[in-house]
Image (cartoon, rainbow, N blue to C red; front, side, top):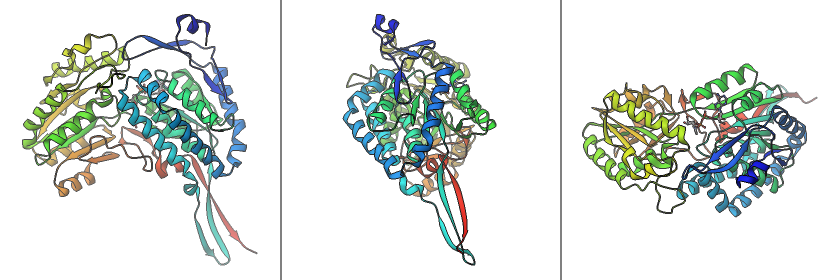
Length: 489
Ligand code: NAD
């Protein structure tokens, strides 16, 4: 622990290079507990020399790791799985302390992270190439998959453990080495999981961890030793990462922001729809890339749905995620809270009707960063609150006459991450699935986040790149193909 951290009893946050944790000599950021507003840790940002040393360590470790049999590489992930289960309570508590998630949300996101490790542990069969005999007379052709080299992951604050686990387990199982740059707002979950990977037997240098903001990211994007970049975060930064890293000759997948819609038809089970949409919109305090941010109520659905939504929001207990009865936790920090409150002002100025004002919930007076569930009714698709990502517990209800109008609203969005439809009609659901221009689609599901065996990403302004995260796309992203043509003489 640094002297300053020790004096204030703040937790420290090492970087990890070549398997060794060390305290950086860079500028120090303070991390605050979102539930209480109290400082909890010091985050020293990595220096240029430290970032360069991390890249050098990853590059040096690459040849031996790439030559390690794939089954041996995957075996490390089985050990990681055991260690994650052993340390599950500790990891979940860390997620709540850093990010503010409730115990249940921390449990869910830990489980999703664990599933990414399970997926990566089975990567060996997806590393297989293809063979065609007799592509010519006496000639066979076949392909093989090869790791790329040093890969980089840059992650957001909203899922401190799960989003990093979308990236490096698959990357290293495929034989790459990796440098993780987690969000400077929630880096300690990443430190702990990288430590567990080493405890599980991962050789030094295969997985490295640095801390920082734009300067560190820019260094990683411009270093010629880095071959591929995976990014998850807001769209403006995703676009920047994509264009900068691609211009520097790197392979890039950059998952951006979202404005997700749930369409509710009049034939839907209103109670189920309302409670599912509530959980989607206000779970994780609305800080989730697949959260419903706009409800499109079709025809007669609007009145009963709004009534059920307001009732469910009133019953939602907002507070410290550590309390077992808390349903919705705090916002990540004071800047994010201010941005959300500004959007509520904007919605009112734009003429939307504030059907539930989360600013009035008593919890907002507590220390920490709270905003209660907020619902706007009669929102027009052209309003900023209907178009821009708020990333907080603010739900807009747009009323439309029919499915075609609903499609217009959803497909008119500049984003295309996820959308859902709530209906009892298979025909309507099928039409929706076919026509919705989003990368992830749900039917009677509020959070249509696919499990790790499928690729994860959006369309349009929610994604910059070609191959999505996880699933077969993830394996293709972290490998390149070589094709042999052989005449057997
Ligand atoms: P962010 O874009 O502010 O930060 C993401 C990462 O980029 C962090 O590691 C940060 O240090 C770095 N960064 C920030 N500004 C940068 C800059 N100018 N240049 C280079 N690097 C920079 O995102 P956030 O606030 O941490 O996370 C919330 C966002 O992430 C939301 O927009 C949310 O929709 C998105 N998100 C998307 C997905 C998805 O699957 N599409 C998943 C989770 C979160």
